[in-house]
Amino acid sequence: MRVLVLSDIGEAPPQSTELQACLRSPEWSQERQLLMTLKKLRHEVQLLVLYQDLQPLFEVARDFKPDVIVNACEGFRHRRDLEAQVASVIELLGIPFTGSGSRGLQIAQDKSLVRRLAGSLAIETPQAVEVEMNQPLDSVSLAGLAFPVLVKPRDQESSEGIHEVSVVNQVSACLERVAWIREKFQSGVLVEEFIDGQDIYVGLLEDEGLQVLQPRELVFGKDFSGHGIATYRAKWDEAYRKKNGIHSRKATGLTPETLANLETSARQIFDACKLRGFGRVDFRLDLTGRPYLLELNANPSLNVQDDFVQSAKLSGYSYLEIVKCLLKAALPESKELDASRRSRDISQE
Image (cartoon, rainbow, N blue to C red):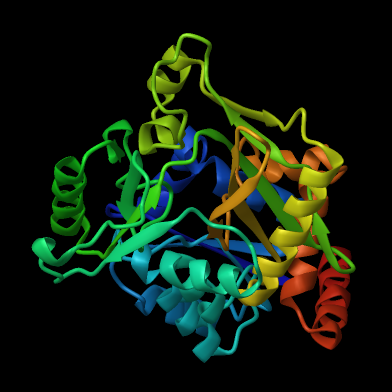
């Protein structure tokens, strides 16, 4: 089977002569792992990295004629809000691809819409006020919210715009943060009641039905003095993580009732948001163990060290099995069978 691994980059992509060297670097570990695994599955594989032009995608679709695309593309032109548009282009090309379609990606990225869908399913979310991009600050009413509150962008992913200073205790500080986010991200803002507790990540994988994976928790070192939230630095700054003992691990101490609540809520919101193949649902447990839904990640990282893959491994899946599940979910049954035959034919040549 011909498989295209599609990724993106925020700077000019390397020349073909430099690509192998790049693939050995930590920044490209996800792409490297995917290529190695797909080759182990005896597929014919090609990698394409998008930068500022879609023309290479059209050319690869014409010349390589992939049977399926492994979509590891998180944006376009260094903009995460264009992730769904890339999926739309693939849909227009008529090529099956792993993970959620454009509709699911758009829904998952809109935290306001996810909150409304959760409410319709009786899934609890933190009390919040939405501030539109052009709404005058003097018209913002925070009545009914209990301080402290967490101020974050409405349409960003990967904790962009979330810092320790995002948790504020006064109205004036809240409005200052709202103004900063609107200027920085050109985005609406969510002002949520801060839930004192712990972040829990629940992965889901389609494998003969939707499987809920072993939850993981975000933990902080005993000397950490912050609010214990998944800020941008807590996720992506390795020196900061090491200094403060920040890491994820198998969730511990969850009662059967909490586990059942997490599983049910994760399944419901996955389906309601039209996700496909795999995903991750992020919750916040308060100090009594009560879960509140925070957000969705429709196409979580497939880096072997990241939470989705680690959750799958705790649930008994090898990396190879994860990839096989994603390919199976992406391909209509008849095409999957045809592609499997073609893969065997290639391997026998």
